[in-house]
Length: 462
Ligand code: PMP
Image (cartoon, rainbow, N blue to C red; front, side):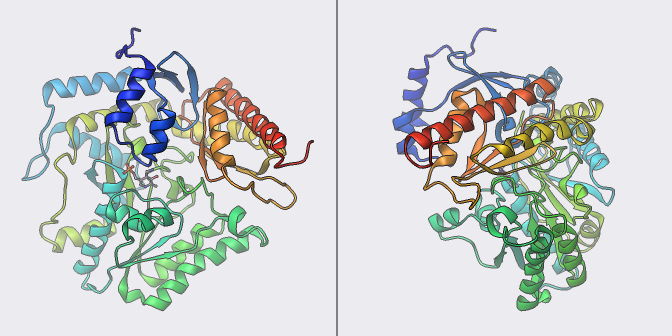
């Protein structure tokens, strides 16, 4: 296929450095090193501007669940755009795609969630739940319930509310966040913060921080607890099995809403349709995005339980909230086609019963590597903890994760670094051969890192 854009890599990099301000990027640093230019993609593979091929271990940004190059989605979007490229869903209007997608989403959602509010991103979805949860308690005659409890090292997006609900210290420090009314509690990160303890016990202790926060603040002042079923951007933190049931108990007993942010975990990533289902809990509200359209068109939404929808619909009157592009026809068309693929190809079941267990069995072999302190995987979400010393689990002085990520790229694999935690989240269509390839390339990159660290004197010669 001829390249859509025939400019040279150096030319694109120079233009990009002059005019394009990138998200979550040190712009001066990027201008010095140059961007990586991705030209095209097919299946699980990216092609760079100079023809280099990379196995996409991150499904873009955790979103291309059905893989790249799905003609069914492209065709559905093109058809929709010819027929109705845009119309809004305000003012008593809808269009067939928004209706059909909402219905299809509630078919795959847990049975108690029968409505969806459309947004354009995960961040907007979290702004939406922030407002909707407060409106719900107003409708319940408990207007004092306004606060949110969230977690340190959570990621809920980059808008003011999203970043405030999130627990990323650097994001908060940069712009005077969080906003008022949010309390952050500890995260269930056993490897990083609880290794001296039994894992199950640690899960309970961290869940009971929610109970303690509610008791201190007063349940009459708290609207909701929000958390990702598995923290993604925080480093694929898979909570101990004891954690979620205890969280659900506390929310139930103290009568606060439970919001599971399914932006990453939704649409099959864990081997269930939604992460809450995997952990056996029922959420009252669930922000969604990413795998909702597999990233082909930007879209997000909120799944709304009957518990919340009932009183709000009955008593709130107009909900003064929405976006020009809520339920955008092209995004809905992409989403409908995407859901059809997920269902017809049984990709969720495939993650649960087939490729998930297979990749995990291969991934866990990396635990024997001298630089790996822990390997973990659930569904198609995996992490490796890079350590300098496996006995003490001491980390390298700095930058080992970023170096490992760069070595991965050199070895033809996209794997992301969160500090010294390496993470993967490949497309759900990953084949057995690609799973094997992913692990081989990850091991080679770890070997290369170990050699470099030995050469530089950060670890003893093997
Ligand atoms: N919530 C979670 C759990 C996420 O991982 C993300 C994005 N990585 C968001 C919200 C924000 O989504 P967006 O970037 O689409 O605004």
